[in-house]
Length: 145
Image (cartoon, rainbow, N blue to C red):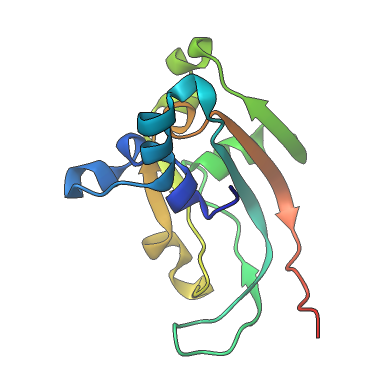
Protein backbone atom coordinates (compact mmCIF):
# COMPACT_ATOMS: atom_id res chain seq x y z
CA UNK A 1 0.00 0.00 0.00
CA UNK A 2 1.41 3.38 -0.96
CA UNK A 3 0.16 6.28 1.14
CA UNK A 4 1.14 9.67 2.55
CA UNK A 5 3.65 9.51 5.44
CA UNK A 6 0.98 10.64 7.89
CA UNK A 7 -1.10 7.59 6.96
CA UNK A 8 1.57 4.93 6.39
CA UNK A 9 3.74 5.79 9.39
CA UNK A 10 2.91 4.36 12.80
CA UNK A 11 1.00 7.12 14.65
CA UNK A 12 2.25 5.81 18.00
CA UNK A 13 5.68 7.24 17.09
CA UNK A 14 4.40 10.77 16.50
CA UNK A 15 2.50 13.46 18.37
CA UNK A 16 -0.69 12.00 16.85
CA UNK A 17 -0.85 9.45 19.68
CA UNK A 18 -1.55 12.11 22.30
CA UNK A 19 -4.75 13.01 20.42
CA UNK A 20 -5.94 9.40 20.23
CA UNK A 21 -5.33 9.25 16.48
CA UNK A 22 -4.47 6.05 14.66
CA UNK A 23 -2.90 5.53 11.26
CA UNK A 24 -2.89 2.90 8.56
CA UNK A 25 0.64 1.90 9.59
CA UNK A 26 -0.36 1.49 13.24
CA UNK A 27 -3.43 -0.58 12.32
CA UNK A 28 -1.48 -2.79 9.91
CA UNK A 29 1.22 -3.53 12.50
CA UNK A 30 -1.48 -4.24 15.09
CA UNK A 31 -3.62 -6.48 12.86
CA UNK A 32 -0.94 -8.29 10.83
CA UNK A 33 2.04 -8.16 13.18
CA UNK A 34 5.05 -5.87 12.84
CA UNK A 35 7.14 -8.65 11.23
CA UNK A 36 4.58 -9.02 8.43
CA UNK A 37 4.45 -5.34 7.44
CA UNK A 38 7.04 -2.94 6.01
CA UNK A 39 6.22 0.73 6.55
CA UNK A 40 8.14 2.85 4.04
CA UNK A 41 8.30 6.63 4.43
CA UNK A 42 9.65 9.16 1.96
CA UNK A 43 10.94 12.68 2.47
CA UNK A 44 13.08 15.41 0.95
CA UNK A 45 15.18 18.40 2.00
CA UNK A 46 13.98 20.85 -0.66
CA UNK A 47 12.77 21.10 -4.25
CA UNK A 48 9.32 21.42 -5.80
CA UNK A 49 5.95 19.70 -5.30
CA UNK A 50 2.68 19.57 -7.26
CA UNK A 51 -0.02 20.69 -4.81
CA UNK A 52 -2.62 23.39 -4.18
CA UNK A 53 -2.08 26.23 -1.70
CA UNK A 54 -5.44 25.38 -0.07
CA UNK A 55 -8.18 22.72 -0.27
CA UNK A 56 -10.24 24.66 -2.81
CA UNK A 57 -7.23 25.74 -4.85
CA UNK A 58 -5.86 24.58 -8.16
CA UNK A 59 -2.81 22.34 -8.07
CA UNK A 60 0.41 23.87 -9.37
CA UNK A 61 4.14 23.46 -8.94
CA UNK A 62 5.19 24.97 -5.60
CA UNK A 63 8.64 25.42 -4.10
CA UNK A 64 9.69 23.37 -1.07
CA UNK A 65 12.09 25.51 0.97
CA UNK A 66 15.13 23.98 2.66
CA UNK A 67 14.15 22.10 5.82
CA UNK A 68 15.21 23.41 9.25
CA UNK A 69 18.56 22.10 10.53
CA UNK A 70 16.95 20.33 13.51
CA UNK A 71 14.42 18.39 11.40
CA UNK A 72 14.73 14.83 10.07
CA UNK A 73 15.33 16.29 6.61
CA UNK A 74 17.98 18.72 7.90
CA UNK A 75 19.84 15.89 9.63
CA UNK A 76 19.78 13.71 6.51
CA UNK A 77 20.81 16.65 4.29
CA UNK A 78 23.85 17.32 6.50
CA UNK A 79 24.93 13.70 5.96
CA UNK A 80 25.80 14.67 2.38
CA UNK A 81 23.77 11.80 0.92
CA UNK A 82 21.69 13.04 -2.03
CA UNK A 83 19.56 9.93 -2.48
CA UNK A 84 19.30 7.10 0.00
CA UNK A 85 17.18 4.44 1.61
CA UNK A 86 17.58 3.31 5.19
CA UNK A 87 16.25 0.00 6.48
CA UNK A 88 15.82 0.41 10.22
CA UNK A 89 16.78 -2.38 12.62
CA UNK A 90 16.43 -2.55 16.42
CA UNK A 91 20.01 -1.25 16.60
CA UNK A 92 18.85 2.08 15.15
CA UNK A 93 16.55 2.69 18.12
CA UNK A 94 19.48 4.14 20.12
CA UNK A 95 20.62 6.59 17.41
CA UNK A 96 19.90 10.24 16.64
CA UNK A 97 17.33 9.04 14.09
CA UNK A 98 15.10 7.91 16.96
CA UNK A 99 15.27 11.13 18.96
CA UNK A 100 12.00 13.03 18.57
CA UNK A 101 12.41 15.64 15.83
CA UNK A 102 10.17 17.24 13.24
CA UNK A 103 9.53 15.42 9.98
CA UNK A 104 8.06 17.33 7.06
CA UNK A 105 4.50 16.40 6.05
CA UNK A 106 3.33 17.80 2.71
CA UNK A 107 -0.14 16.85 1.52
CA UNK A 108 -2.43 17.77 -1.37
CA UNK A 109 -2.61 21.31 0.00
CA UNK A 110 0.62 23.07 0.88
CA UNK A 111 1.64 26.66 1.56
CA UNK A 112 5.42 27.05 1.28
CA UNK A 113 5.29 30.28 3.31
CA UNK A 114 3.99 28.28 6.30
CA UNK A 115 6.31 25.28 5.84
CA UNK A 116 8.37 25.81 9.01
CA UNK A 117 5.32 26.37 11.25
CA UNK A 118 2.66 24.03 9.84
CA UNK A 119 4.33 21.08 8.17
CA UNK A 120 6.49 19.25 10.73
CA UNK A 121 5.30 16.30 12.80
CA UNK A 122 7.34 15.38 15.91
CA UNK A 123 8.57 11.89 15.02
CA UNK A 124 10.64 9.01 16.39
CA UNK A 125 11.74 8.03 12.90
CA UNK A 126 13.00 4.47 13.48
CA UNK A 127 9.73 3.53 15.19
CA UNK A 128 7.42 5.32 12.75
CA UNK A 129 8.79 3.46 9.72
CA UNK A 130 10.67 0.27 8.91
CA UNK A 131 12.48 2.07 6.10
CA UNK A 132 12.84 5.60 4.73
CA UNK A 133 13.64 6.97 1.29
CA UNK A 134 15.39 10.36 1.31
CA UNK A 135 15.76 12.59 -1.75
CA UNK A 136 17.81 15.70 -1.05
CA UNK A 137 16.26 17.80 -3.85
CA UNK A 138 13.00 16.59 -5.34
CA UNK A 139 11.14 17.63 -8.47
CA UNK A 140 7.36 17.93 -8.74
CA UNK A 141 5.44 15.35 -10.71
CA UNK A 142 3.85 16.51 -13.96
CA UNK A 143 0.16 15.80 -14.51
CA UNK A 144 -0.76 13.52 -17.40
CA UNK A 145 -3.37 15.15 -19.60
